[in-house]
Image (cartoon, rainbow, N blue to C red; front, side, top):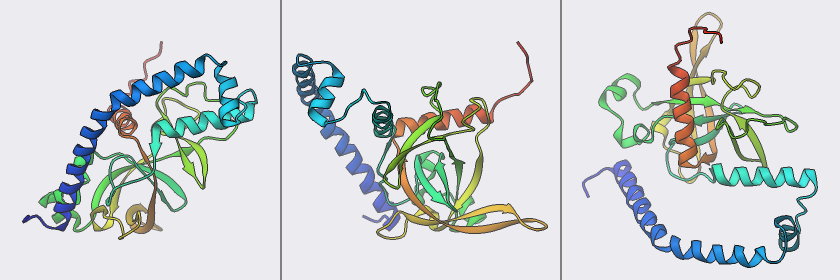
Length: 244
């Protein structure tokens, strides 16, 4: 009860999340059983392609239709609509016509948990690691689509594919920056908008420039965790130029 507004909001969100998990755990077995019975019943009436065409009027025999279906599925399993009231792990945001993902651990993104040393160093700005996402061309063949470096989310009502690093080179280094979220990453009330300070090259020296940003999507937690792990591996490569 003595917590300030930011601390109270964080505690409420944590409490609601835990209760939601308990509720899901309670109903999940019955939902899984019902889904299994539905699949068994449908399985007796034709092939998956035939069933899909019959129930959803989607013809997966057509290459273009199948591509759209695959992208919709991939977006469903790896991303979701954004939630929360402050910037956090896995939030995908647009800044200066570019797409970035926040890959700082969630515990370091809670506004009320900002350490005194960070407050002294950066004031009301919360530093975090942002990785620039690179758009994968529509006609690109993703032979290594299960390499865990591709993500899918909606852009303007259409599912797009992005890569964590250079799409052409699986072992390439991701483009990462330390960015600074104004107001400790708290969104403007009723929106997913916030402001970012970014250090970049000026005419004769480095300068800090402020940008408007908006969260447009969010990675599911396991996918955000995977990218954080890949980022850690990339940052600790010894690079001894061994040849096989």
